[in-house]
Image (cartoon, rainbow, N blue to C red):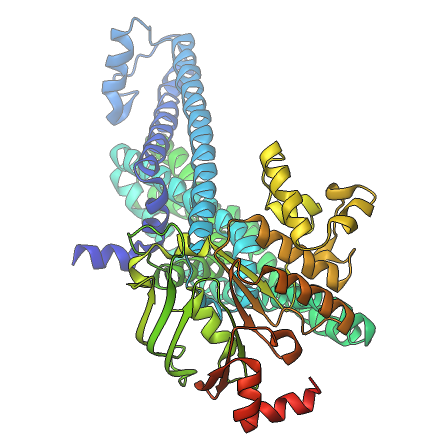
Length: 597
């Protein structure tokens, strides 16, 4: 029950606590000390009234209910004179500011550690995100959460703990004020509570705007990603003009929400002092006029409450700032929960090298809440065999390859790797032995050497492996002709090189690794015939050295495959070499005729 209560009413606190643990309480303790020292400093102003007409304190009740403080300073050898009192005030308030400085440094370090831990945790969770879950994720949300979203959560942390610190200082002021003059304290507390109703509506509006702003940011990031990814098409067809209209609309919408929150924040700041003064003056008037106490008897309480109400207004402003980031914080919590729920778990058995065969037995697959994509697949792939998957779009070719590569897990059936169920292995070690080349080559905006070696150090051993890889991919001459050779920067998505060279670079990257399996998913379908033929020769030269798995649209690229798997609507319809399928399968024969292979 206590856990549920904490989760319900302190869910944001528990989120921050999960990163910082006891350090949160140390920071709050420092805030308590600051509040106490400031209150004691104000208490020392009380005897100054008695000193106004003499050099020493003559009134035995000059400290009011805080008479014990006078006893303390006398024991310390400080005489209750004007100079002594001013010295006490100076020492206490100086000490307060030293503690405040320590508190500020400590809070800054906490914020830094919070950011570092949050970023690392998010990156590590994303690393283990199930591929099946990723395929249905909102790319704009993912991008925004990792960039703007994290910065907003940092702001939420700062505002939340400023609110907590303000709350603690207010409570300290109130406790000291109650000890000084209980009746006056109760009246001011009632007044302060009533002012809270002014802010309740504002908070709800701010929270609603924050959530809208977060959703808007996700959409904006999604469009930006697409505009960068599809820039060439958009530019060539002048559709970028219409695309930009959508982006500008989201910019204007986001600006409108930001402006609304800015207006609310400005309003809160501007009404803070008038509300403080209104409450304080009203209580003073009631205390003096109707309760009959003198102004001097409530002086310290007045000073404490003026401070407390100012801090209370700062608290409300900080809380509203926190509300402005609530959408980003909720999104971060939801995204983290989604990553945890969809975290891929790995087996404990180590995988060293592919030895014998990959075996699919009665394997079916579907995405959550979707229809079956693969149906009762039975297939064995032997080591160093070249096997190709063909069939119309949507027949399940890429899905079966993704499953073989360990990106997807069978919904039913068994997938064995060297006679052991793949779930028992740490699949990451298996994937270290896989090379994957897609229709759109993956080229990073970095040097050619870093693209191929994946940022390995240029040691003699790695340079030798690099040379072998570019020779195996038939780009050694191309590299040597580049102005800066292997250190030539390739540009965004390899814009500085042709499609064929990008594909060869992708092949070289995989050859640089110690491979067992090379997967080629429509790897040559976007190339011209001459380039396709050249790369096909590269692939044929690798035949027998690796287990090669090809997803092909062009049948000319798979003529030399050991076996071809013909797929239709998630089923394996036939298996055989090129000539056997051509002779016995009418559907495959028709495909060959249409492509004039």
